[in-house]
Length: 274
Image (cartoon, rainbow, N blue to C red):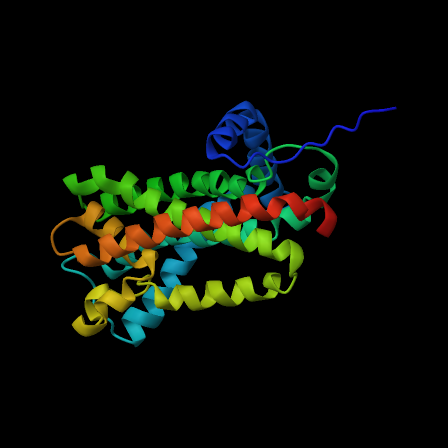
């Protein structure tokens, strides 16, 4: 009588970390594959990583600064204030959008080969981190053109970057797992992204938010991330409301923990649902 071997995902986090380390090559391969596919058969290729934030900066400057007359922060040019916000925002929202349907799009390998499924929605962060680095160099080039020197607070950028990544991964794990069972989420995700853009201080300063609404506004971790980036790069004159940072950090970490645990619980039924 033949023995059946059933491979089930490990429940303990320590086992998950060991598995992820053992499959680190797969993570890099999938990330590089997604990066090449993103710009495949495009006319200007990876140049879109530069053009997208620049075009967004131009549109926001015309609409919110020139037409709506929204103020900037301190002496920072409005265009630079917007471009700085675009860096963490694009990293967050592109990672979230691309990972939301990632399990369904990779249903072939998910249903036939065993590996830590959580790798699939995680790869989008690595892909968009490349775009983030490119955009960061563009920002420093624009600042040099304006003869501006980055603040010494720039050493805190990794902290704000970590908040954005944890929040993005948490939402990605949760939605990508839900999307396997309820395919409606692929239509809801673009709507969430659009609303999030206007609820986050990308095209405006958080200083415009009334004091009585600041704590409620802090529930969105990207508010503290964007404010943190501006404060880290431009220093004085930029707004960093510490209660917002504390709440944003807590929400980000909580979202990551909840999203990861839900994904690990739901992945046992992925093969059946796909």
